[in-house]
Length: 146
Image (cartoon, rainbow, N blue to C red; front, top):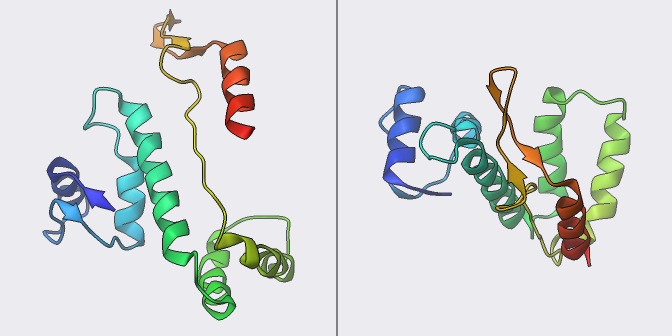
């Protein structure tokens, strides 16, 4: 992940460390989670937070795009204890086997809904909220999926 200087300083303060600097960094799990949750550094708060989440997902896909099945099963074994689902471990590993051939060639497309210009920010019951233009969101989603 390429960190801006203010993001690196935020993470260092939040995690009580001095390890991170501006530039490309390999984040550990706690650092990655904290990075994905940052809301206070940018004027558009939540939009920047969700952008960081998309950045992290893209970085993870890129890192594991050409990983072998042994590596992927090892990663699954590490993360499955932290996931609550009604699927069994065997089912999840089965899905991983099915998806492995596709991962190396998949094209990731991401979109933010609501997009700029497709929402208003009214105050309702003393709370600032996003009010999305649902028709515009549907149109954008259809265009993205085409």
